[in-house]
Length: 242
Image 1 (cartoon, rainbow, N blue to C red):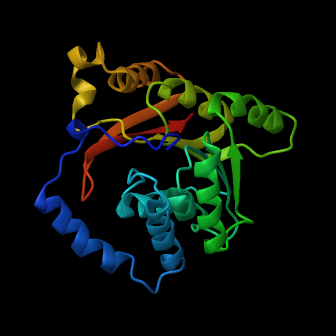
Image 2: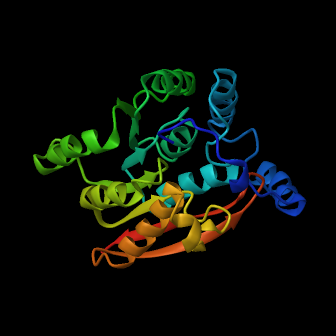
Image 3: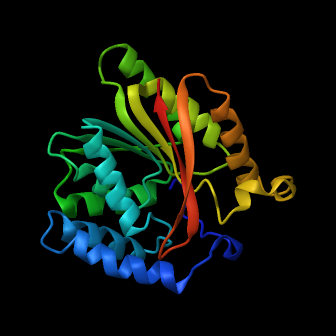
């Protein structure tokens, strides 16, 4: 996340069945014996202790991001919205060969993320860049074009939704052919379908604009999947670059 604002209450929907499934499956599929288990737990608890809101990805989604990186054999990952580096550490733990570039607009939040990264011992795999994503993107693209960086294999967007389509466009430019661009929080408890609310809610308008824009983008093939779990009913957009 680029922002630490708490989600509005109307965005939260929970169900005891969803929570029960996550509480059962996650400890079996990600036991404490797995590498970086302690580091990932610390990233969450330390972030909350330092005053960040509980808006990072759910544990199972973090594991999914790590698995997605492994499926792609990702060596270069871009994250838009660091928050406390919880998802960052999940992705950086996917391989000893992966490098994650993560963008955070708030310097104070970036300091907390750096603490968590240091605790995990992943400073060599993670580069935190402080600044607004729209200001950082041109330099990253320039580095790629000049051969100073490789194209990204996987780009994960978990930032403000008003600019989701702008972030997506830049990420597609910097992601390799057959690479993946992922936008989180694209369903928002079903509000994606609420055209009336989009007139007054900039986040809902943003995810609808992103959905429509991605659908018209000939550079990608994309799908939105709805998800439920211990945190919420939401979903994500997954696009493969042609």
